[in-house]
Image (cartoon, rainbow, N blue to C red; front, side, top):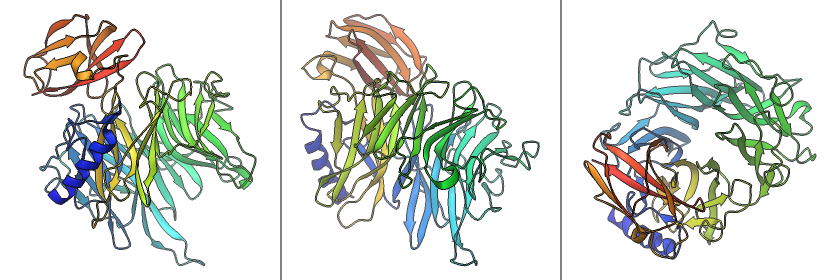
Length: 501
């Protein structure tokens, strides 16, 4: 293991120098960690205590298995999770993971599809089955869910679950694309079909003739409705960026877009695929969508499905930055991530940030983009998750020399400088950290206007008056990771990680 760590550490230090955005040295080994006997992280979820569930794949001959790991909030692997820290599921041999969700009780839901072989018809079309499975918080499959922990759709030749949405009563809504039609399916909390819903537990949202909607994912909106996104290619002549809004019963909400459907046609060329791949709702009900047409793009729409003309150009930002995943920070800034060519045959992680109006954020690493390279081979970014207001988790893969690709998990500190040229730790200090009961906060910056305490998910727990030195009594907090968030009079932010023992 030391033969891997030493060259990685040197590379990380090199790329982090002289930058105001950097790999968080308090996480893992100088900002990153990895797990052997794995291949790539596709999805990340966070527990309320800040612990991290990473779900992805381990490549095998002819396919891939599902693999999960767990780390605490500072990047230490939980070796009691699964078997020796890794939960490997070899029941499926060629998987594509599309979603991960955590239930209130900590159980882990995974959704996606599994290739099972070729049919016997002319040409031998692939057979792909949608599935959702549930694990206990310790990484053991929950055999009480569905059939031995797995609900699988075998009624279609090609189907995939692109989203699993947990409802307040712990029932599930699954959004699938099956043989060309988008469906919403309802499962009970035990993982069985709710036959009172639709027909045998499912309802079609689209069809093959009047509305050919290919969904790529879905999110639950603040009002409890569901937004599914992807493309519309009705007539197979010109695809369009499309999202639909439905209620939990599967009915289109007609006040959204045109009778529940919002579409944007940016390129009339029938060979251009216009597809939405990411979505996040803002507190005011507006929605940020990420995808691609002629170029990569970010689209901002109002709650009614119309374009927000105050964003970029008529609500649409076209860009050429690396783009695989997208999220929005609490301050409204938009972060996209992907992989960029660092040197010959060597890709690294690439993060770009935009202001809430769609302009490039030049306060982010001075250029708007931060790149980091963990190994001398390809480091590929597949997913991102906020681990606090200004800390970004990256999941993907890295490939040290003479090794196959392995899980790579990194954390980036995106805190602003609060307008100061000095080291952030010299102008805002917190001690002791980790702490047991009380924390002393020292602020050597007269521009600071607010101090807030948040949990690992960004929920505000308390606000404090701004004093040069203050003693905070935090003995009532549960053990875990928290953040003190400092904001100045220009709305610049620093987030300091706190660890309660």
